[in-house]
Image (cartoon, rainbow, N blue to C red; front, top):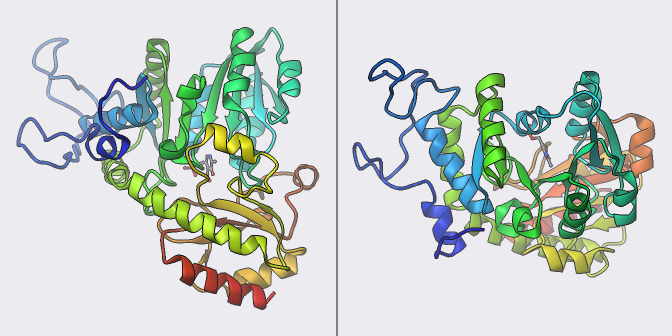
Length: 384
Ligand SMILES: Cc1ncc(COP(=O)(O)O)c(C=O)c1O
């Protein structure tokens, strides 16, 4: 897919980030202009109005397309705005399959807004290929996956689901937020569209919100450009600059995230107060083989159970380097209580059926020194 002769770290530094043709500035300028002078009736220098296109956004979108090996990239105000744009092309009567264990904001969007447009949404355990095949109907238009899933780290076989879906004329989209394009390439595995919350690893510094869609065909490009222009949830030029800057160090950061993630998971796997530790890089993860097959690493997201809400509360109250906060993918380590933060939007019944218990804690392991992080977890677990 990606015709570039360059390796990934070279692409991360240079994709979309060549010098400004006007001034030679080596950093992509932030074009803070909502509108652009026209050169004649119906004629411009490539841009007319920033909702439709902005030179800084163009560079980020080029970088995103390159990193995911896609045909075009499209940047939005948040990850949720990107998912809204993804489903904006569905019509009343269409059937949308979504993986069952998914960020609860996606469930809130689908159930409380998208369903109101007459779109039929079905949550399926997509780690079960037979269940995916059985769920596809003549009206199915899209299978939306999140792998690894949030917060239980359940994997879906992207290549196998894409094969099943394509045989029935159905497209597959993948939320690649948890691994970033460095560790997983959904398009190369056969998916049609990749989605990101750039708020996470791509920005990498927890200082901005953003989202992205990367399509694999000219039709996707046409469709997502229309949604950007018509619905308008586009990323601001300054935010585009921040994400572009984050991308330059993405492979480097991911290497450290990965090293720390593995070390923390190995430490937690031996701790007597920790149960149901979910990290795809541990051989005890039921889908370890799939992780090795479809991922280029295991990342730094994991979850585990401390047995009760009180125990989780004591742990979150005792951590010192890890911060008790929602979100993930920044340089700093975060810990969150999924049931009352990222997954508060789910009904109690749904949370229970997914086994997102009151004792469940999710970690986003940052790039600090791994021994410091393990010592912090040790003292916090001692307080549980
Ligand atoms: C996997 C995943 N997808 C999408 C989103 C939504 O992204 P945003 O918060 O940028 O709207 C999140 C946010 O936590 C997420 O974890």
